[in-house]
Length: 275
Image 1 (cartoon, one colour):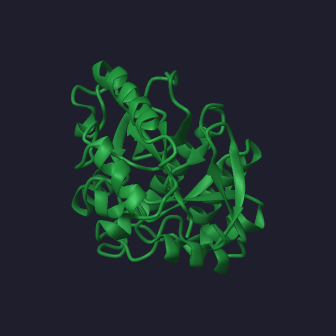
Image 2 (cartoon, rainbow, N blue to C red):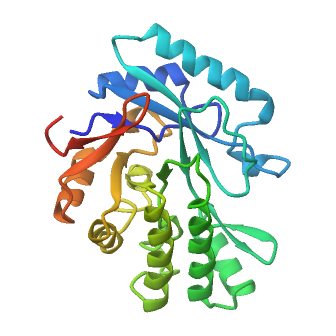
């Protein structure tokens, strides 16, 4: 089993457990390292309700460092961030950065793709007049913009906008325009050496039965030589390594034989199924 999860949340943002509780759960689950990826502050009064405040960032970073020292030799603990283009470009103190989009940016307004199926359906009709292809193109343009951000190491949940598709068919991810927009973004990101995560978070929370990205997109990533990692996007202790065996199986089915893990300094390749 892949023995690292770099996509982890805690009570510092929208998680349900402390950093230490998540760390101990990771050790119990057989992981040799865990990385915390706090949602960075957003330019809204409440940060959409799920990001850390600027005032608490020093406390978060200090607590991760404390845990890494306390559990040295037991499990490695890394300090990361989950960042998106609406956040400030402030990366000091992070050992790695996940670049993720949770919104569609359109005519100066941000529309969440992560809130609820009903919410997405309303703005797709009201703002895009049912033109979900244009909405998908706008979404992937935000991912393409991540390619220019040198500090971003990992591309998070690349096709998050399909989160509710198994309950409500909001998008057609197999359409030519959807695929072309995704391919354009992945080409830009791959050219800059970004690593794509296979993310099992929507499965553990009951929204999907398969990881992000879709098998179709993962096959295209493999054909283009993209590097991958495996992440749980865990918000609870029981999910720190959720679905890793299934994620590895999907990766292998798409042609992958290795994934990339962080060693505290850089990302290194490890063989799938051989850790």
